[in-house]
Length: 158
Image 1: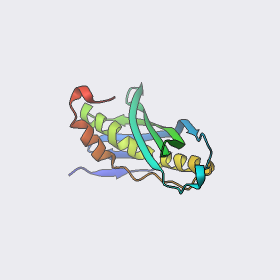
Image 2: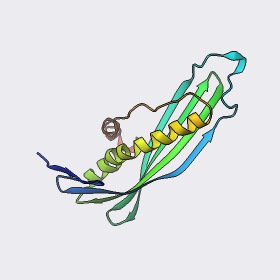
Image 3: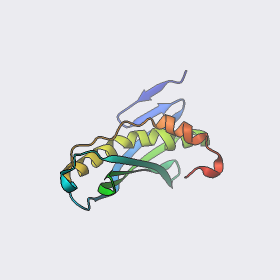
Image 4: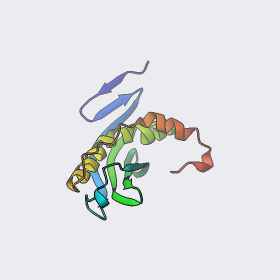
């Protein structure tokens, strides 16, 4: 059994150490072509489309910038109510990780750390745009990573 220890910003699992150095909003975009108005007094029944992507850039030996990009579009019929895109970033110091561990950390652990920050930004932008509060559903990044790992190599997006 692996021993897990945590400090304020550092996690150690089985000899792999992960230290969160910083979290920041790298980019955000909010569009609402018609404001919070619905045509012809329609009732609020939007359809949502959610896309997420994770990428990483090596900043130094054992230091990665991980970027979680979330795009949320709300439509009612053909009318776009709003489109929000948030790029939430974090700098992680990762040592003692094998190549497989590094992939899992970048594809699952790091996005799990960044997600609550991105979720808050998206919610704030939607409310400030005059729309009802919207909280992204919780995401199981471990399951998404496992599912992506099962795809053939040529269809994976990095």
